Amino acid sequence: MVAAGVGVSIFGSCGHNLRRAGVTVKTLDDVQEKIPIYASWLTENPSPALSTFRDFLAAQELPEMD
Image 1: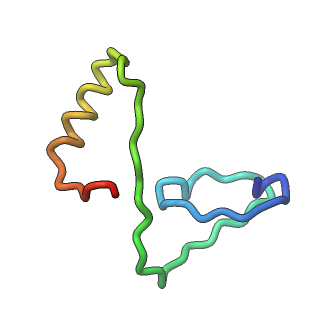
Image 2: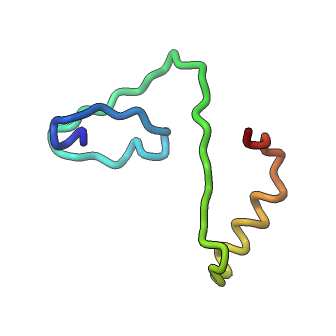
């Protein structure tokens, strides 16, 4: 939407290097709020990489969703 000229976006630092011609990216240094990040997957996905990722998530101390 930003590149099309019809919106603005706030995104996590992981997207900082995804540059588009004509789009300006600025760091918001004084922001103290944290953005929640969610993971989703198909229940029946047999991927070994997904299994490893799910094990990683299960080992984290993550807040419960409301």
